Image 1 (cartoon, one colour):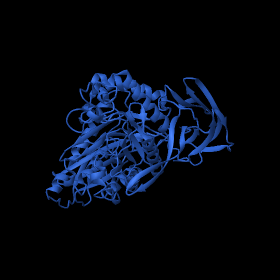
Image 2: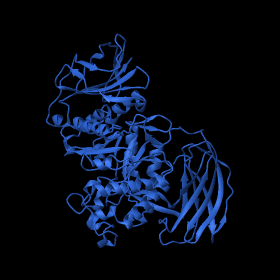
Image 3: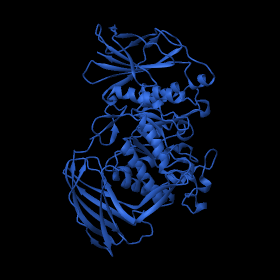
Image 4: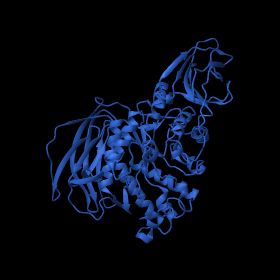
Length: 574
């Protein structure tokens, strides 16, 4: 964990013994953490209406109050291929906070329970720029298309779903997946924090009761993401526990089900029952207390595919999301982004248009032509809802038919140059990407995106008026310009239509393309001025050629380099 500052206080019979500690310095956006040994017993130490730690923090700019959380430390080991956690010491009450402004911060720590508020101690720390990359948290970018850090740099998610790990390997499995992703330019993963009976990170294991072991694992995974400069989409719940029909349904064994000692008569009551809403709010509050400090938390996702819960009701979902977002904003002082997802690729118009959701996502499966489908949805939702959008899950009907990863390659490139806020994110991380060693496919797109630079600084539009001299070739392109400047940038991907995963699986191969002519109509293409076109190998992401064409009547004419399957380019328009 980045620059973890841990200050322990011994508490005996509620008499606080303070261990002397030197003044500490914490880099901006890094964590200052503090734990208290408060040995009073509670029926449910996770229930904030029963007990909680509060930290009142005075910075040079404002005062905030944040929650603490009940915590158990562990050591991990791998025994016969299975992760084993060994508890270290007794549970503690902790808080985590990342400063966002320089200067001295004063902290007052208290425990509050039904007997009152018990002040524990005061402390101070100094927040400094030294040791900080100053990126900060992820926000909606100023172009409302892409994401952007507090520091101004674009965050363009490149990665995959890593919703659970296989073979009982626990955090060791996340080590493998995350390191493989990061080595090839990946900077994003999606986690499931729900009890879906797979080897995941189940926060809540019965109504109101949390799994301290899995929470420690989640601590480890968040810290791993911080070290690798990755960002995490934290999906807090999935349809499975509220579904009794076809597909992967778990209502029969769900801890929400009254038949199993839960609190719900029917799955859809989750969104209307006051008890259920209180339970979910408490879980959100705990997750915020424990993880909202981290700049590696990209966003909160309320639900995975909420529309396939039993008897889905759009109006009830609108009310529920608005209520939950108000709750999150009340406690998450760092205002992480918020979204939710749907099984139906179109989604729910009433929900996706809500101001209480910061971006939209698409899930899409079973397409023979990944590029056309994923690019369509990413662009369509952006233009419909005027907020960032990307394909958060995709896959083909049988991944064994694409062991070379053409569907992944094509999805990454098509969405990137068609106004998506991030690449499309493959679902089959454990059964397809890792076993077939497909992580190298991320190399090309990550280097290309890096060469584009600050995507969020540009106002982008699709290039719609373009021609290609070879009818079997398809052009995916977008044009962007910066405010008050005539210069612009075109990001394009030229694909041979024979290079879909289904065509490759059928044994078809693409021929070498030579002397392909392209014409692009651009609104800010100054006549007679030299422009620069850099061509890229899509596998390696390396620049392979550079040209200087001219515009005539706002039309830029190009000749593509020789290629097989596909090629990409950046056009710097003067």
